[in-house]
Amino acid sequence: MPAVKHWDPALGPLQLSTLRRALQAEGMVTAWWSDVANSRTPEHAHPFPESRWVLSGFVRVTVGRETFDLGPGDRLDLPAGTLHAIEVVGLSPVVYVTGTTDQSLRSSPAR
Image 1 (cartoon, rainbow, N blue to C red):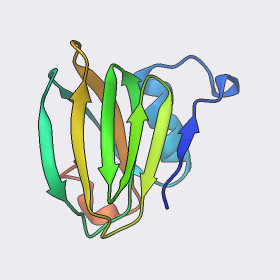
Image 2 (cartoon, one colour; image 1 turned 45 degrees about the horizontal axis):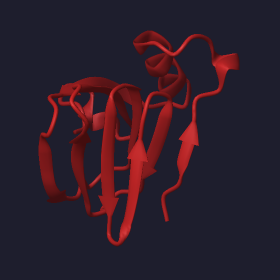
Image 3 (tube, rainbow, N blue to C red; image 1 turned 135 degrees about the vertical axis):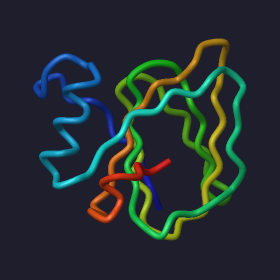
Image 4 (cartoon, helix red, strand yellow; image 1 turned 120 degrees about the vertical axis):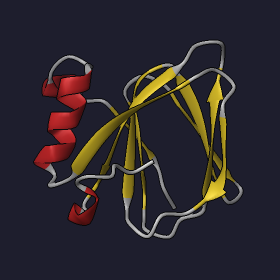
């Protein structure tokens, strides 16, 4: 089951470039996303593994019966084929970086 990981300050300041650099150092293709308050993405799955690392704002990711509330510096890794739904929580938009080891997505980033 997925687990939330937290930003390690030893990696540098929590900012877009350091999040992307950290995922790229793991061999991932990265993209950044922003979703407005109260937006929802219905349950879906990707045929590739996905990491989601929050820069600002708050997002709730539901995986089966598990709910993960992510805030700044929180990361959730999902294996390929994992059904999940996403909801932006609170009044602010969320900005996060996604990463995947599927190099075929280099020109079309993971959601």
